[in-house]
Amino acid sequence: MYKGLDPLLLSQLRLAVMSFLMVAREAEFNVIKEKTGATAGNLSVQIGKLQEAGYLSVEKTYKNNYPLTICRLTPEGVAAFEAFYKDLQTYFDSDK
Image (cartoon, rainbow, N blue to C red):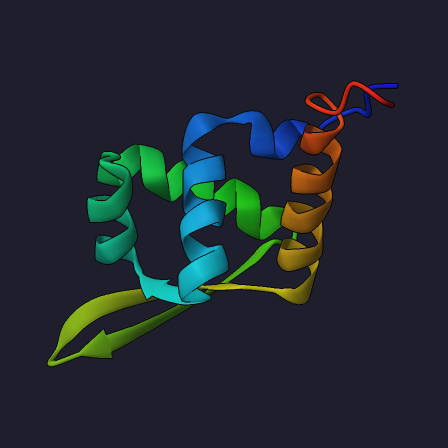
């Protein structure tokens, strides 16, 4: 039986952000922007949605007098991604 997938992670960009952060655990906004190829505006909106869901924490600070945004996975984000991955696997497992 197929399991329902987390609709928040079905977005290509949100899934890319979460996938990258599952390895990196935290990254600067510009690094995520570079890795995903997203525009700053779209990435900002999608990070906001992940933050609202509790999947990411966002820290706004300064580095050499320039704004710096750091995104970190939360334990809830890790659990949501792992559940998404496990549920997605059921689509490929013909025994279930």
